[in-house]
Image 1: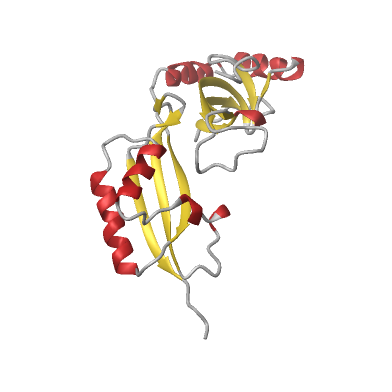
Image 2: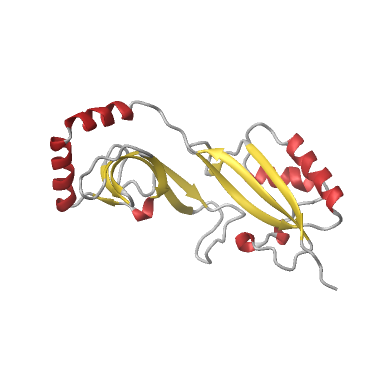
Length: 209
């Protein structure tokens, strides 16, 4: 874990929406679809996400709904003296809620994430849909992004990284595909995300004459 020197699994910490226990930490590394800085390379550390369980808000009031979340680790910080007091007082003042929270910690929770990408397409819509469906059928049950690109390349390069549309805003592109690659947090193959689902939607922009 690259970022676990500040918050480790099992630590209480200050989340963006209250005081929480860090349940799991997930590290992500730069892949082909990322905007890689000049001083970084493919496979270098990118960011960490923390899966956590919320107990109370910043005033010490117990949180009863949507208590298990995943968020960017960089927006979290260790408990300081002020919030240690808030947490301890909340646990003391709300023993039933705390007992329920401890029981809640034993219930396993998994989260899914996704990589959303947009690519320009050549040819016509029907052919593109045909080859995208072939890609979907040929992908293994679990696959990394480089495997996805290899399968795409074998299908007449209907998806080409040189046609990647940054920020998913395909203005002026006649034909394009929106792709969603989804995964369960914690599923990796080496430093790569291990995906298990590929969905797509081919769309067209109206061309003004």
